[in-house]
Amino acid sequence: MTLIPLLPDTPPDQPFAYLRDSVVTRARFLAHVSEVADTLPDEGCLLNLCVDRYHFAVTLFAAIQRGLLTVLPNSLAPEHLAKVMQDHPGLQVVGDQADNPVPSLPWQAVRLQATASTPHLPMPMVDFHQTIACVYTSGSTGTPTAHYKQFGRVRLGILGGAEVLWSKTGGPCAVVGTVPIRHMYGLESSVLLPVLAGGMLMEDVPFFPADIADSLARLPAPRLLVITPFHLRKLIESGIPLPPVAAILSATAPLSAELAQAAEQAFGSRLVEIYGSTETGQIAMRETARETAWQRLSGVQLVQRGEETWAEGELFAQPQLLNDVVEISADGDFRLIDRKANMVNVAGKRSSMSFLNATLLQLPGVTDGVFFVPPRSQAQDVERLAAFVVAPGKTREEILAALRAHMDPVFLPRPLLLIDELPRDGNGKLLARSLTQLVNTHFDAKGETA
Image (cartoon, rainbow, N blue to C red; front, side):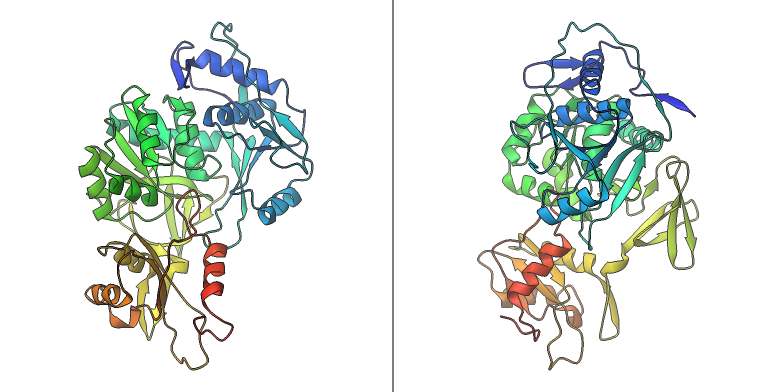
């Protein structure tokens, strides 16, 4: 058994988190962790549904100290929770709400009592191989699946990412994240990065542009903004000025060089994009405004076997298959072609859904949109693509004319359906089940538009 400290070796009085009414030191955070750990059961699994990021972090690390598994569902949709409960019998909910958000399960409220004058406590030690979390994929390409994370390997991944990120920001940052804390990206970048790599945590999970600016303004420099491409575009379009940030971190969906450049120009800071997945965690980074290749994080190797690419190294309990098509260079860095599921062939010509979507989103007047493969009608002998587009004030003909200038005619959407909005989740992702429901609403059983 290899034991490692629960928290990094930083001075006990060092600022660790910023709350609305106080600054929390590392010693006080540890006191809160120990306080909650003493109230947790001796065995079983915890469903951490805390809304406040600080309460979430305290409860997560209390469970780690107690040796309990934390289960992190990607949503509270009844069908997803039913699967989570089936996967983890005896699940208990912990949260900071006034009432139990899942009445069918046992409930424990998180209430913190430790004050700033709490005496310093000895640092708990944790087994490197202790399984600490079960994280579910988002379901953007199908049914959510469970993946289990070990403390030591998660910590190595966080430190590898921080080594790159802090070198770009000039040192550890105070972190504001707009992303859900139970998603792998939000967990790593807005919770574990500040806790395990010397940064500073913030309890807010802001969503709207004005709230993001307000949250950043309450933090000392240097600041890091953790966001998604979808919300980044909305933030730029809002025109709201931000307090100076050392860097902007983006993930969850492909980020175009044009959007990265626009963000850097609008906010006067560099933008760093993460490559990773729920299965692998973060494994590479790049400055998208200037770089096309991804630089692997320390401890990550990519190995190609036939048409498959595997991530290997100390960060992984076992090799992880990538769901993407990548091109590895001689130095081990790589270029992303697209997700395997996003490669399409129409009339013998190949393209990528990510390329087509990025092209659509760059058109003037288009605020959102997505290409998809519609049900094939009885009269159709060749598979075609279709698209849902949000473009207030634009006509189908105008959008199609703009698309013709950027892509082969075989990929033009037939039909192109104008709608008011796409049902994206908190990460800005369009989940497979949501897209399927939208398609079923607009197409009948024969593949004809309703």
